Every structure is written in structure tokens, then in C-alpha cells.
Image (cartoon, rainbow over all chains, first blue to last red; front, side, top):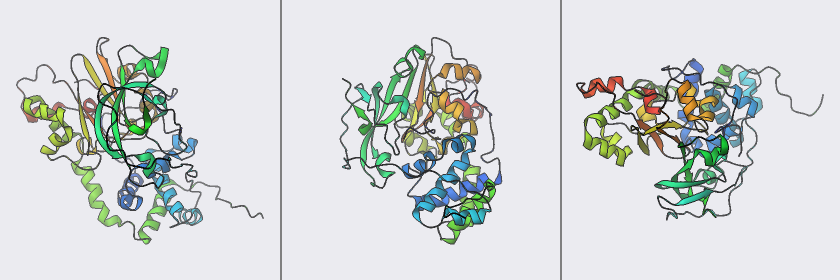
Length: 209
Length: 197
């Protein structure tokens, strides 16, 4: 989905609030949430597309205004309610207050659920990223959809997140690192010489015309 | 009264929300917090940039190791004992006099846990994620890393399976330093690419 999580290239966030080193957890609840998440991995089927999409479905204003581990909290809790092991009412009773969850999953499975195991592209091939803008989970950032790039690495085949996240199981797809010039991505605002690499599944790609 | 569902007006504090979902998961037998404490402690004690620094120092002092590292990062890093979740497919990108590499995850927070630990807050925040792919040179200069105009910047958006580690250039004046001493000067930021040593 073209959600608020898909941040590449957006303007307006200001300077990076950099720290040279910091503890993993500022607050005890952050450590506690990390612990909950680690423990829930098996139940969730890993921290892959299904979990990530539960965060991507957060209300945009909630996503942008909440600390990182609150994203994990909201995602895991949304999955728990959706799976039927608890209800929002019950959680709000236990927490003694409002407990915002993520929005409903609008994802749909693609028609082709067959594994693809033979890479179609090789290093040096030019490709174009399909403009799919799917309603569900994808690892094709919006800023590269429709853009042309060159394959620089073939990583083998992996379980494609778009299908796994929406109940289609583990389906193999070749994975590539694709290089884009800054001008291809940002037009006149791009800079000479700089390049951006994005790791993209073969199902995101097509031959450039 | 209406049949419409009403949520409490007051947002529950985040601490109370974490406690609420944790209690549900414990009651359902999904998690055992006491058993999990050891795992969290392992993250805090054993995972962090001190591991990546050892990889870099080895690559600086052992040309054969560096060759293996660039050819198969996952295997070469495992030689030093670092492997596990978020380190299953490691790709090392080497800085040279002509190339500077920068790592980001625009979609979430992907980061090489075995070699760098858990990511810092700024790495997961919108400012870094939005700008690293759009204006890396300006961003780096703001963060104190001025990249000469004739040096190409290569950004790596870890959008899928690979996790990236930058191999910084060995600084001048370090010829007499031991591998252990070298590991001591390698910073987390230099391995993300937001700093030049």
C-alpha cells in the first residue's frame, strides 16, 4: 500500500536528530515490548510481511506521532485481535483507556501464486519497476515504481512478502539489487553521479520498453 | 444510548497497553516473559557495533579475509562468530577514494543485528528514512560527513532480504595499530555510512 511508512523521498521532516550512541531502550516499556515481540515471532509466523503490514496499516497520524516500539505494540495487538484471541474491548478494559489499533487489511493475493525459481534477469540487465501500487503489503517502495534501473546483484530466490503477508504461504521469487540514478528517481531535483540501490523481487519488475 | 460501540475517551498510557497485550499473550500460552528475558539480555550484552568493528578491523589487516568478505559477507562474518536473525544475507559495500556508501531502510527499520545490534532511534525515524535516498549528500554534510564532490555516493535501501554493512576506508596514520586497536576506532556510524573515519 502507498502508506505513510513508505517514506523514501518525502519532504518536510527536518534534520536528523542524531545521537552517536544510545541504549537500546529508553524506557522500561520499550524493553518489555521488544520482549513481547521476540516471544510472539513463532505465533506470528515470523517478523515478515504479515507483521510489517500490521504496522503499515496504522492510522498515518498515529504512525508519525508515536515512538518506534509503539508501532510494534500496535501491530502485534492488531494481529492478536484479528486472530480472535482477544478483543479491543477486553484490551481497553485491561489498559483502562483507549487502545488504538491498525486499520483493516485490504490486501489481495495476486493471480499467480506459483514459485519462480529461475532468475529471468542477470547482472547488467536494464529493468523497469512495475507500477502496481497494491492495496496490501509490498517491498517495492513507491519512489521506484515506474522507474528504470540496472540489475547489479542477483541474490537467489526468497519467499516473496507480498504473498506471504496475505495468507498465500511461502512462494519463491528471484531477488535482485537494482541500481537507479538519482535523476531517474528525482528528475531535475536529482544529483549527478549519485545512485540508489533497492532490493526488488522479480515479480515487481518488467522489461523496459 | 445508541447501539454504536464506544471506546474510552482517554488514551491508555503506552505502558498500560503493553501490559495489557502481554497479559493476554501470557494467558494464551504464547509467551513466557521470564524465559524471554535471557534473550533480551543476550541482545543487550552480545549484539552491537563492537562485532561489526571486529569484522572491519580483520578486513583491514587480512587481505584474504577482505576478499572473502566482499565475495560472501554472510560466510566471512560467520567466521568471526557473528550470525543469526537479520544477518542471514549480509552484503558488504566497500568505501574507496571514489565511492562512499550509505545504508538506509526507507520502508521500516531493517538493520544487520548480529554485526551492529538494534538500530538507533534516528535510523528508524522519518527524517533519515525520507532523506537518505533523496538528498544523501546534503544529509551527510548535515550529519558531519562532507563527501567531496568527485566522490560518488551509493545509497543502499535494504528493502528486502539483504542487510548491508559499510566497509570504511582505513584512516591514514594507523599503520602501526594492531587489529584490536583498529577495531577500537571503528564506529557504528561509519558502518552505516553516515560518518567517514
